[in-house]
Structure formats: C-alpha cells, structure tokens
Image 1 (cartoon, rainbow, N blue to C red):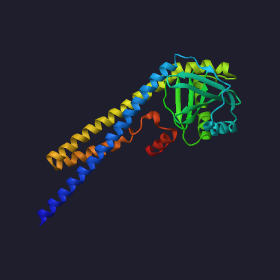
Image 2: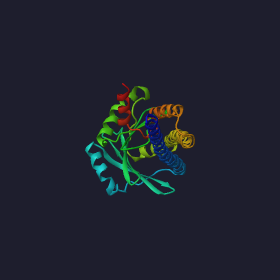
Image 3: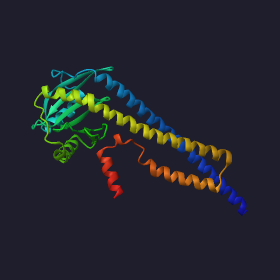
Image 4: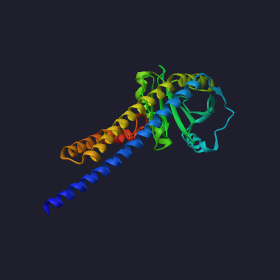
Length: 278
C-alpha cells in the first residue's frame, strides 16, 4: 500500500510539473512574440524617421489642434503654457503635425504629438551646450545619451511637468543656462536638429533594448521547451526536479528585470523598483 501511494504521489507530481512546464512554454512563447513585434516596431520607426530627417519641418501655425487633443490643450493652458505654433513633417504614412506651446519664461516647450490613436505631451528644455531634457506624458521612449535624457510619467500631465521643472535644476550647473524659444523662428531649427540628431539615438536604443529582451525570452523558451521534451520522454527524476526548480527560481529572479525593456519603464516604475531594493 505504501509503494502504491508513493507511486500515485510521484505520478501526480510528474503530471503537475508537466502542466506547469506547458504553461511556462506558452507564456514564454507569447512574450517572445510580443518582444519580436517590439523589435519590428523599432525597425519601422527607424526607417520612417530616416525618411523624415530628409525633410525640414515647416510652419503650420494656422492649423488648430484636433478635438481629441483638447483635453491636453486645456490642461497645458492651466499650467501657464501659450500656443506658439505648429510644425509639420512629411512622412511615408502622411503628414505629422506637432502643436507647440511655450511657458511664460519661454524656456520650456510642450509639444502635443500623435501617439497612436491618442496624443501625448512632450516637455522640452534645451541647455546652453545643446543638451536636451525631455519628459513625456503618458508614455514615451525613456533613454539617456550624452546629449539627451528622456523620461516618462503616466500619473498626470501636471506630475510630468512638475518632475520636468524639478529635474532640470540638476542639469543647469553641468549644461549651462536654458535656451529661449520666443517664437517659431527659434523653434523650427532646434526641432529639425532634434529630429535629425537625437530621435535616431532614441530609436537605436529602443531597438537594442528590444533585441536584448527578445534574446532573453527566446533563450528561455528554448530551455523550457527542451525541459518539457525531457519530461515527456524521460519521465520525472529527482535530479531533473531539482534542475527544474533551480531554473524556475533563477528565471523568475532574472525575468523581473526583462519583462519590459528599459525604454518602456516610467519614472513611477523606477521609483517603485528603487523602494523595493532598499
């Protein structure tokens, strides 16, 4: 009777581990597909931006922001921003228009830009040495280079603006005084340079980070598939069970940092991770 009960327990454990492995393989396959699509999106973005850099932005200040962007416009005005103008870029998929606002000091720009079916707000401050600080609401490409730092905040437009104004203080000693943007004549050359020089750096980091996470999940998928195959063909053993548990624990620990590429992590997520690490 004891051997029968032990055999039943072993069979139950074996079946449970196989079910868990099947679920794990399915989840990893889905994550691999998602990150493959991210890589494709980054490559498409690079190609579109490469074509966009061939064209100079032109003044379209007569065009009013669309109805879907009115909520952002109202909140921008409440923060003290005034409408400066609009800039158009010719792209393969049509004309892209950025609506441009400036604060009372004329040192912080806010661009309302298309973001899928919605609109996003991008705050910009440009320093004397050309370094650009960008804060995006609600979601953007968060990267850091020698000439650019971008961050995303999804809490609210007001929180993004407050973060931007506070954070730029830490850059003034290093990068000099802020540049002024009193009119579109001052904005258009900077915007053209930003699209030609800095946006490609963002897209390059987006592609590189997406490739890293894709490689991680693709490798994990291969390992999990081999493990599942071994379970189905060789059966369960104590050694295989120990290996499975160790790999699962290691995968969970490492995977926490790879579920999203760094460029998709918002300030809120970074602060939460920092608090958990303390």
